[in-house]
Length: 122
Image (cartoon, rainbow, N blue to C red; front, top):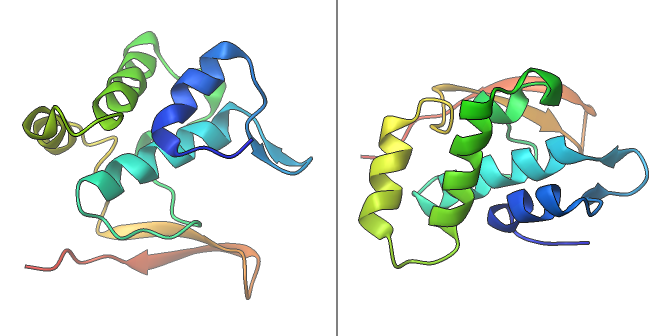
């Protein structure tokens, strides 16, 4: 199933399978897409290998509070009705904001993790 990250929390909670092929599937895929798509809704021009913050955490160590934050991000990302609220949430949540040094999985050349510098344009 293909869907934007902001739908991923709903998909994950419903028990549907989410991912890419046989090996790359599970709740972690939904979470990575949600975090990346939420950042994109707030101006980050990410690519498919980018992953950071709450997206990088193991599913088994996520707290109830972190799961609640993911649900809030998913809800705020569904429509543009809450633009100011979405921007304020993003600014206030370090787990969602893009770091200066960004972990990126290079699917094309090295098939390995690398770190790239991210500078927000003025």
